[in-house]
Image 1 (cartoon, rainbow, N blue to C red):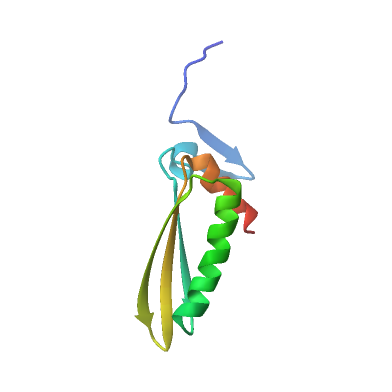
Image 2 (cartoon, rainbow, N blue to C red; image 1 turned 180 degrees about the horizontal axis):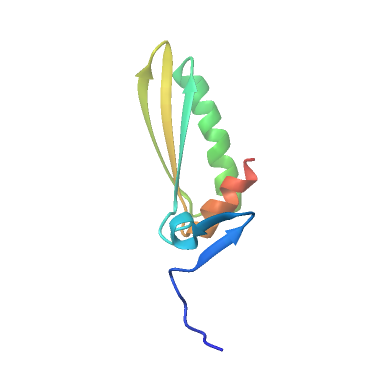
Length: 96
């Protein structure tokens, strides 16, 4: 039995074939959340709730945000950078 890792492994589940490396990349540590709101204070309030949840689970999570006008409101783009892909996936799944 070989212990070599084949990066071209294919998953065949429920008739769907996917190359595993094309789904989860080891350097995919950033979760970007676009938040639309009528005003900046509401957008920041929602963003802070995401940041609090992320920091509660992963204290070293880095946070950045960018705001821009959008139609009648504001678009706040929140970026959460985790130390590894697993942390990002765990946090993202906890939001659902």
